[in-house]
Length: 467
Image (cartoon, rainbow, N blue to C red; front, side, top):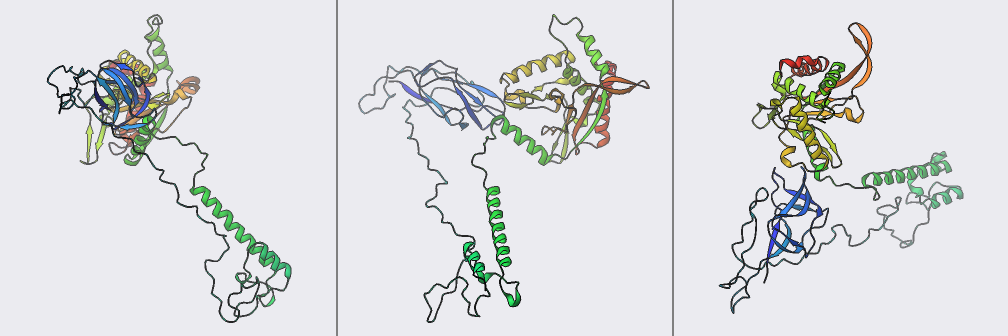
């Protein structure tokens, strides 16, 4: 008989502890081969196809599309191989002969192996436990009029047991009301005349006193209803779970704001010469299709600037109270995709020229749009370049990509009036902004970095000294 093996969600690396099922690639009853992808999951880092290390027939799947599973939770079970029927007094898999070895692969993902199990026995999946709604009330609460007193004195004496008429006198004497219209108005609105202070002669309760009390009670009711509306969200409001990429971005940005005392400085720069240099570099490359992008030029400028100002290519070890300057530049760049904002990382950017950086940016951008980025390609950055000019905006105060120390923001490049060589002219102008961790440096260092970047944008020939 077939042996049923359980395949659990493996460790996907980078400290990830859970994943969301995006799409099942197999159905119950399908035959799968060793290392065949069986499910597509989304982690906080990327979309991943998970291969099954066993070959056989899928007998069960655990989790619907959209469900989140922790690492180590069952994904599916597979019936593999076959064994001889059990001998008398034995159990399946204990027969001395006729057993077929289980076919399995090696380590196909980080952190788990797929060797044959130590004991051959049928796994019995426990019956699912039904869940009970946590918020189901045992009984509906009763409503109480707003003006009903919480307690009333118990009557005694000859009149005990009789409800006092509205407007009847208290032990100190009758209620000071003369007009029957005033009594009727109070009765219609559920007001206790004993609680109203009259403004007439000798404390007489007038119609204006009752109307004022009515307005006061109505105001309390409206205020109470508004408070309930504020404290209880509208049931028709749409709720979007903060998980996957969106959840990871939310957590990282929140942590950055909590832990990093950031500051931002900015400057306008004349990018006319940079655009002319790019046009000259791309002249005659139309057929090859390997054109140099503005982002690649800015990335190369960043690596040159970080060589001059290494304070900004660092991180802070808060526990040790140390600034850790990093030896190499792993340049992240912000990329907007259908799955949200991601930051792919160009490794060893300080060793690359403009063409190499541009080729790697193009490769990573394509992978980001297709959802094929791996966790390793989204982590380990030391400095981030954020080109928000593609959204048609001029400036921003970006949030630092924790645990980095700085981020350069680039706005759109547009024609603007500019004083060039002493005369007013129309030039291609861009706004550059630098958000930096004030713990790693002061404004002088940050300003020096930003000024060097702006000078390279205005005079690209300055880069020749570092090429």
